[in-house]
Length: 441
Ligand SMILES: NC(=O)c1ccc[n+]([C@@H]2O[C@H](COP(=O)([O-])OP(=O)(O)OC[C@H]3O[C@@H](n4cnc5c(N)ncnc54)[C@H](O)[C@@H]3O)[C@@H](O)[C@H]2O)c1
Image (cartoon, rainbow, N blue to C red; front, top):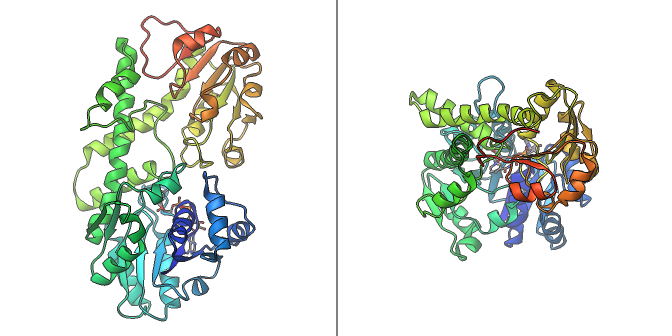
């Protein structure tokens, strides 16, 4: 099948490359000319494991193309996916649908025959209805179908998630939409991936409910971590103890510096806006959002406490800047408010991230950057692990300690345990690992 993908960001590029890999003919479209030129030259605009090879091999097989021109991109398409950004609108947290609606208007004007228009972007309930209206207003050919197919891939594991999804959700209001999406995903459900057909509104809400639930698990375990610290219990073991229960499950139960990234923060806010408009309270999600905001804000205090209460004149090395490992995405990363607060408290911050520096530098004024973890630790009073990149899991703690002038290892991801750190002469400050009576450095 010929497919067009409007928006060639994380979701559009990964989805487009994977759909081409299934054997479809895919054209990815993006307004950003520099991005399209880069991809055509073999340079990926994002850091995602396996993406470069997947894109290259599908270009070589003639199944994957890139263009800046929407009309050219949809020429042969039967289905057009919309995968543009839906960031939080400044001020109110509403999903900003400008990019979606602009793309739909342009699409309507370029269409010469009815197509299946599929929203892959995360959009509030009712957006599909509005898309159908815009298409009609702009004179799109009759018989055009509008479907919702929210995407659940995770950055850092995006290709695997797309190719071996837990489920595929399709919201369609007519047979044409259902049949075309069934055909597109046929290679996947041959592999037993469940495909759920539902209404468009239900599909739209399913995506928000999924992200809100996962955000809730993170905030839940972070609050349990606070309790562990107060009563001398270990959150890692509590998480294991509850996670082995199938009704709970082990994932998203890692205490840490709070959730960030391109989805959870904006999607929880957008869900609250939808609920407010519908006049329905969502007290749990509302609390999840404030628990997370408070948590992110409190991380610098943990560093200050580990340093005896004050950050003034202290040198702090931050390891890991991206919101999670295996991506260069810095959107809403917990490292940003942490570093800002460390600096406001009078600390000098030097950071290292295995791939995120280019994205991070413009967001972190006044922060110095090191070439590796040990260089960052040089002369530091504290080393703070913020993102659990694999390479931070096997640091030579003796070498790290020998470079530092202080002894605090603030481990916001619980990568190390207290005894390992102590063997290297470091004092370990983990998350939710209550050590009653523990004194700062
Ligand atoms: N990033 C994720 O992990 C993830 C996962 C699941 C769902 N989503 C959702 O998918 C959507 C896209 O997210 P993303 O992270 O890929 O965004 P992104 O910002 O990486 O990419 C969006 C792309 O759309 C392009 N664009 C905007 N308007 C356009 C137009 N009119 N025509 C052509 N191109 C246009 C932009 O130039 C940009 O390259 C969002 O709704 C997001 O919530 C993201």
